[in-house]
Image (cartoon, rainbow, N blue to C red; front, side, top):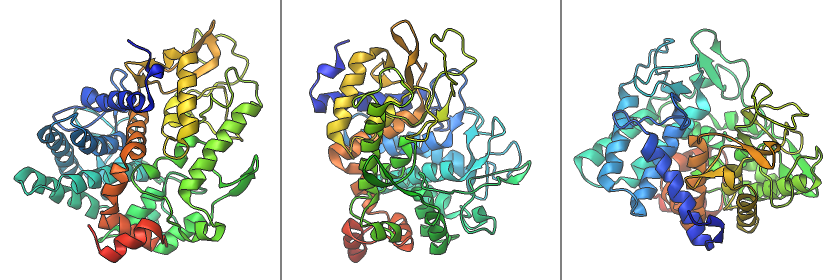
Length: 438
């Protein structure tokens, strides 16, 4: 296999994007459209990964990587499954009140691991459903059905119920104990969650709910950069995969004379500076080797890990600058920052791949690597691949290359209504609302 780092930018990105796409084709269950959390054996389904898959298929069709009929068939299989799934909320069901359990059995689609009914993961699933409905607009029986089911799935979600009478949306619910005893506090990937909840034509939350959430934000100055704090890099990316946040501002950002897109760029600059400072003396950290985020890492219990002189966190949400930081980095999180700071991202990706080629298998980035606790001169590298990593990499490469997903979702009236209710104004949103586009 030739060295991907020797390719020019477009060929380099094409190769990594196409490999990320292949994850969804290779791992999905064609009978029900469900996609596993990871490529590891016996992995359960992550409903958020299904949302990414439903967003990936339209782009693959547009790029000529998948036949439209195959993409529609895969999408319909998933939509029919969720439409017909057990919504009783029982421990062995698939969901409740239009929401779904975080992890499902890939064959039966029922809850596994006693996972929670997840509000954010349901949002990531549903925004993927809406992406498919926006793209597959042909006047054919299959695509008509696809759009009809997509609308049904969105409309049946009881977003108000998810507040449990509180000011903000709860993170989860379990049949054994009810709502989890915490909501969303501080900036997170939940913009897409609140936008969908406010845009609902059936069970919307109010704009006050969004304002209650943003009132918990933490504004900081780190290394000379003002920004809305969130430690893990993925927080600064996930909502951006579907929502074009360039040049539009909610009340919080208007007050700061800033926007979420520029905030994500500052997150990249802060990550680079932190890696240069390297406060914990991790091996490999510098301005071209960074990327603390949620992802897989070595744990204290794993055999065969050398130089283990610090606590290791396994799969965790690592962050800058307050940690945790055990020397584990996420290359997918770096690549997914591409739209915000392409000059730094491309330089870092090439540098990391030259230094640590073990992190790339079948042109697909591993979920984490840690040079500090590797074996000999080789870093610890996560085995298998994570669907969330492949999904966000695919989406953000596409948004950088073509704006395709952003432009498609400009036309989604539900997202526009949610953004408007949240108080977003300006830019493309002003023009779209004036045009009344769908």
